[in-house]
Structures are given as structure tokens and as C-alpha cells.
Length: 190
Image 1 (cartoon, rainbow, N blue to C red):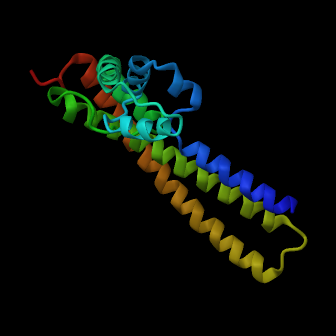
Image 2: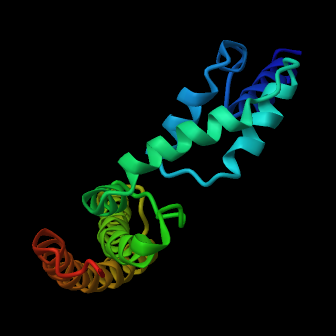
């Protein structure tokens, strides 16, 4: 019986995690503030549909006009070129929300920064895999056959790690060049 209750609780927590807004946020009626927050975070305009769905449960309809006005204000903050780099390095991909005049440039800078983030994450993952295999290799419970297999896996991951480090150095050089380009305003099309 306790196990079943835990499963139900876990399911409810998962469903609650899918909602974009909680009851208090829906009832507060600060649609301008919510739009601004979503704009600053680079969320696409369709995000309001998720809010509409989340708030329907509480009988609340979003004020779409106020939300969109706030989102536009937030996008002014988000759509700064330096933010393209920062968000990419934080692991957030650009979702095409900036004005057409800067859309392709923002995307280009964000993609370069995101590539660095992604490679660093792959390196972390490989290092973790290496560590766990090395622990298993040193275990007294590991058979000789398993040790042979683990050594091969370690060599394979070491090679992949070398490749990733090489790629990272190239990606970081490219990112440095793009950041310099942005500082000098060379990438901006007038």
C-alpha cells in the first residue's frame, strides 16, 4: 500500500512539474510581469498557451495583451548580443525570438557558445564514465575477463576524450573570435 502511494505521489509531482505556473502565479494576475519574465528568458510567444493551460485549472484566463506587452519588454533585455553568448554557455539554445535584424547573428553567436557548453558536458560525462570503470577495474570482485573488457573501454573513452578536448579548444578559439567580432561590432549588419 505504501509503494502504491509513493507511485501516485511521484506521478503527481511529475505532472505538477509540467505546469508553467502555480496557483498563486495564476491568481496574482501579473500577466505583464510574467510576460516580461518569459521575454527575459527568451521564451517564444506560444509560451502563453502553456500558461493558459496551467491556469485553466484555477478558472483563470491570461490577459494576453498585458502578457505580450511584458514579453516585448523582456525581449529587449534578452536580445542583446552579449546574451547570445551567455545563454549558449549556460546550455540554452536560441529559439528565434529576436527581431529579424539581429536574428541570424544572435543565432550564430548562441550556437557557437552552445557548442562549447555541449562539448564540456560530453567531457564531464566521459570523465564520469572513466571514473566508474576505473573503480570497477580496481575492485577485487572484478574477474580477469571483465578487467580486459574494462581496459578496452577505458582506452576507447580516453581516445574520445582526447578528440573532445581537441574539439573544445577549436570551439573556444572560434567563440573567442566571435566575441571579439561582437565587441568590435563587425558582425552587426546595418
